[in-house]
Image 1 (spheres, one colour):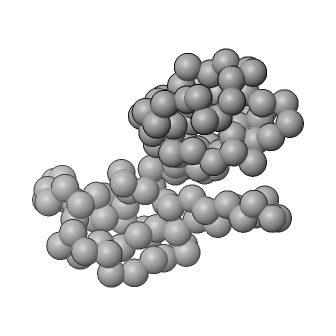
Image 2 (spheres, helix red, strand yellow):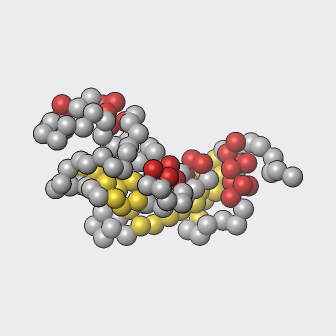
Length: 130
């Protein structure tokens, strides 16, 4: 496995890892059609999987994506989706929704909450729509 924050920008197949700039690991936006390493999985976040599902022409959803040699784990936690967790030993996926109260994390919920809008309204301090 090769774990980065945001994938790997400016990828060149034979380029050693230490020759990439820090920004290549931190600020890129991954494209699932990009081929990376044939002998390891690139595991990254930064781009919510809803966006990546759209790239694939699929219905957007907040789940971990396994595609070719990539594993995308940003399930949109900052936008009302779950925190996606992946056990690299077993490849088992876990999802937790974060419950916020006035901007503070209060608890982690393993089941999807009934009212996601309430969670978003707590994050962005908007009232629930009429």
